[in-house]
Length: 215
Image (cartoon, rainbow, N blue to C red; front, side, top):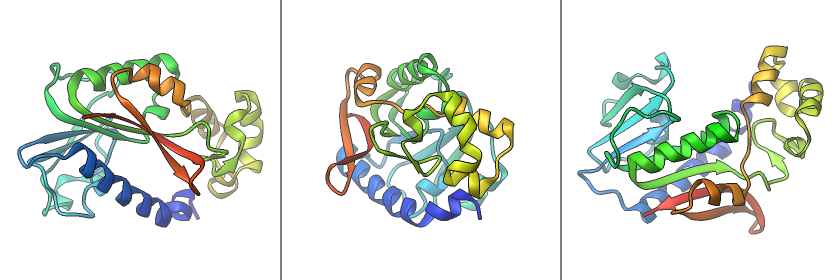
């Protein structure tokens, strides 16, 4: 069993709920184009498409996410780097990103990502898991993200749900530790000073994720 198989059902529910919130708050118009930075078509295919075009941008094109697999939706797959977008200022009515900014690298890289999506998009919806949540969503283990990197490297294989299920190699552990950096709400405010920072909560009080919203 892979870790995605474990949380896919509940994450599907959360994703569909979040997309509904996105539509209610951002109010995309039929003529709008959406740039989904780091996203995949399956985020958008659970409901009828209500915009002219959705472009899913990633560092590379993955064969399991081809345009031809979604004939009922107007989705384009494009290659690009969210930290260095090759688009003009304000060239997209809406820029969307779901659980991506925590994977781009260190805080300097996260600053570049935030700067680029703010530059390219007129409206923004940028979501990321909350550092303040006691359960780290990538390791599916409590508190691990609150410890230093050396501790995570030593414990990830045998003391996290991710490690026990995926049996990662040392290189995969290093990649997880070096390229997963959860953000605090204060950091989100710094990265997105012109946005509302909304908190999604579990059980009404545990921060689950933060969303930067520009309407």
